[in-house]
Amino acid sequence: MTSQFATSAELMARVLGADGYPFAIIDHPMSSATGDQLSHRARIAATAIASLLLLPSSDGAG
Amino acid sequence: MTLSSKSYAVDDAAAAQEFFHSRGWTDGLPVVPPTTEAVQACLDEASMPADHLVGIEPVRERAITAEKLAINAVMAGCLPVHFPVVVTAFAAMLQAPFELHGPTASTGGCAVLIVVNGPVCETLGMSGSFNALAASDRATTAIGRAIRLILGNLLDARPGGIDRSTLGHPGKISYCLAEDEKNSPWLPLAEERGVAEGLSAVTVMAAGAPRQIMNEWTTEPEQILDTFVSEIRANMRHYSIWPGNYAIVLPPQLRAHFAAAAWSKADIRRYVYENATIRRAEWAECGKGAVVGDRGDQVYPALPDPDHLLVIAAGGPAGGFGAVIPPWFGTKSHAVTVAIGDCVDGCDL
Amino acid sequence: MSLQILDPTHEADPREFRPAARLESLEGTTVGLLSNGKKGTRPFFAALAAELEENYGVARVVQVTKRNFSAPAEPEIFQQAKQWDALVAGVGD
Image (cartoon, rainbow over all chains, first blue to last red; front, side, top):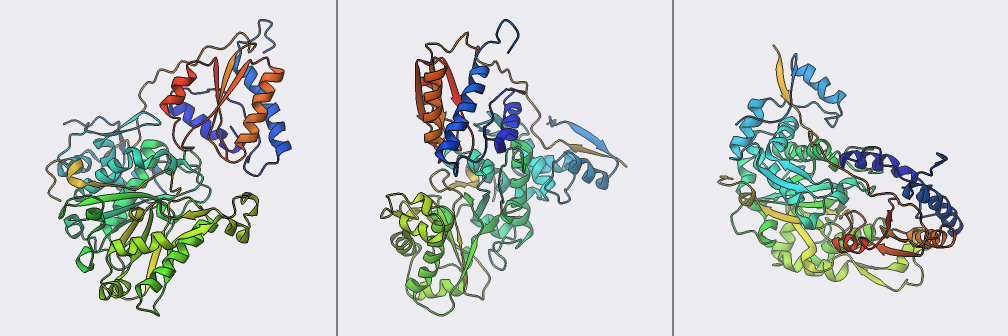
């Protein structure tokens, strides 16, 4: 989610019975961002996405 | 039949106001307390059981019942006789071509334009005359408001909630008008869109704010329409280039010139379709050069075909003022017309 | 005098939601990226796909764009997603 839509994601999750569903947040807006800014956000998103998709590590480091 | 909604005890009508406001269940204006009796009266008028399923909102997979629509209609100030129009309007909004979620959640901030046709207009005192687009009578104001309350209370489409409108516009409070069929030389909008002659019907469209135009200096239909076309082209330049349903509203003073020249609504639609186009390069003239790219010569029509233009006869008897009502996002939501009798069995309206 | 007034909101029906199972690893997986098609998404998702493949061991990234940014994705996309190990969707402007 871009930052300005984070609250709508929280609300839609609640509406759909998935209160607290975790998601990644990146800077807003996208439509006027430069290529470098979008690449930077992609790197941030990839780190968050990997964490969200994987089982927690066994040492509890998350 | 017993109503299934949760019920709350409040001291009086004044207490009811604060009860609703504190929970975010109103639009900021006072509401009519929705008692069981008032809600049942609406359901009786529409001959609907409380648990009648009006439709399913697909994004939330949420069932919309007559009871819940009636509660919000009462709150908005609707009389029981207004309720069949409210039900029909929301049923139309739930139909697939309208794609309800986009118009009611988008940052684009549109409202739902509701156009009413047929005998119901006279029954409910909806004249389609003075102030046609703004609080012209009790019925249009209350019906439009009911839709706003329904969206907030049943779909959580409240400002900053699921409704992410950056600005919105005043039509989000109420945006309902009747077509002035008695004083129009033309077929009613609903009949043109497939409803049988003589039936009452509702058309809904995801719409931006009305843009008023003025041309009192000619009697030539083409020149009058050129003013409307210029406003449509301005919308394409300044707001959204994508084609879809546009609505234009023509008052009696302008309609008279079309009647004198024997122009039908079909003639109007054809003229606007052929002339309301822009080239992508025009965006560079209004600050949007960044998105012209190498497609500057691409031509965009406002209407995918002439039938996408909704021509509405409405407005007070004097004044060469018309309106262009643009779509929220023409390719993503389409106008829908439903006969009231298709939603409300045995309805006399 | 007291008034009994009715609740105008959708009264919650209990919905069962179970998130998809988390993965042991991204190594060798197929990840779908579902875009809403708005401006900026193409370079963003292209960069994200490259990151996932080059730095997180994802074997294949499938990029799809839904037809209408304001509506749920088409059923065909969800059918296609059954072949993936994970789906990432984004909302933004």
